[in-house]
Amino acid sequence: MAKKNTTEFVCQNCGAVYPKWQGKCDSCNEWNTIEEQQTQTAGFSVLNSRKKGSLIDFVPLSGSQQTFRRIKTGISEIDRVTGGGLVPGSAILVGGDPGIGKSTLLLQVCAGVSKLAPEDKCYYISGEEAIDQVRIRAKRLGLEDSPVKLASTTEVKDIVATLEKADSAVVIIDSIQTMYLEDVESTPGSVAQVRAAAYELIKLAKRKGFVLFMVGHVTKQGTIAGPRVLEHMVDTVLYFEGERGHHFRILRAVKNRYGATDEIGVFEMQDKGLVEVENPSALFLAERQGNVSGSCVFAGIEGSRPVLMEIQALVSSSGYSGAKRAVVGWDSNRLSMILAVLEARCGLNLSAQDVYLNIAGGLKISEPAADLAVAMAVISSLTNKPLPSDMVVFGEIGLSGEVRAVTQPGLRLKEAQKLGFTNAIVPPSFGKDKKTGTLKEVEIGNVHRLVNWFN
Image (cartoon, rainbow, N blue to C red; front, side):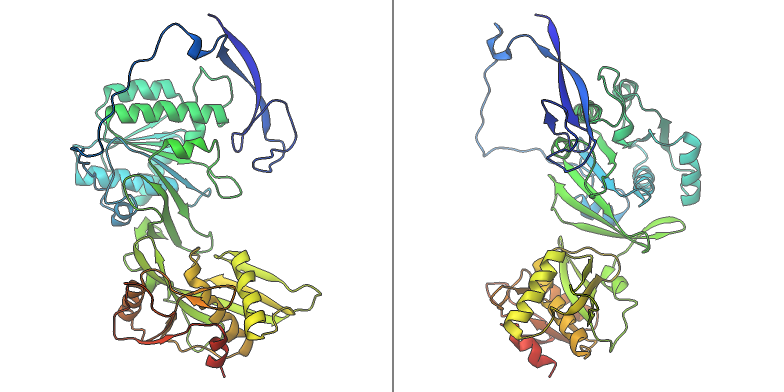
């Protein structure tokens, strides 16, 4: 039966579909992002067709399983984040702010794979830059002699036809928002184009068995632009984070079917490109000044890696009717909760004080284990009394003022001891994960004891 055209209105930011046009998208709260699109649908239901489906073969949970061959990139931080190396046939989506270094990182990955295993052919396909522009970057990075195959095109059909006949190991698409399928009646970068182009490329990668990297643009909210289904289609989603004013870059895995999620890789942006950082704790604490009020060292866990970082707080009298709260690198709602607990349980007057909080080094943290360190930094700035420079702090704070245990305390203290710290303020030990080491540990079970620490 012939197909008929139907009209739908799709948000070009998040992919939400509406029966009619409206100015604001209810899903992502963006204005003027809904556009009309023509789609073709069959004139009858698929389930009502005469052709019946075939039966599915079910197998038990137990049985032999495929052993994945990992492709090493020569960059240990990349191999850590991806779970030990690249898995053939996997699709990896890499997102990040413009100019953060996504293209630089992936060009280094191509060169690293080609250097370790010349038989693994790498293809770099750019839809945003001309060939000469990519060559200039490769020359600046000292990678111009790497056996990387380079092309510049946006036609998905041409890419698929070429890769069908090629024996490729790694293919990089920079970026998926620039890819174009002539069968889809919409402009490049639209939801329909991104979804269709990604589907064709991922299907080819699964069939041919090569690793597919796709660079994704991000919105002003920091999420990858295009349909949310794009992140469900791929095997791994990596976010490349960092502040323009800092030379640190964090590669964070938010989804990984072949490894741990929330794993991070730390890089430093230099003239010759991105250089991996083997000891990020020492780097984040390199510029820390001792005997300064409002500074506290937090022992955190990022993925499977312990990372020590400096939390800075500044408390000053507010000159306005409403006190200001400014946070960089942490959850502002979490800070408001900590300040409310300190007022209600410790009797501190913070309602008339401006509070500024900063995670030094440009790192963004989200784990609640930082609550105790934030509270210590705030009280230190309020009382103008510095904490000992050889002390680390971690612990979660509840609304009743109790300090709760956190995961992997032994790993946190081991990292602190390795960097020369001798004192630690920790929550009461619960569970089987006992703390180890020779640090002098002070267990605090309630936040009211924090105020006594500064008396």
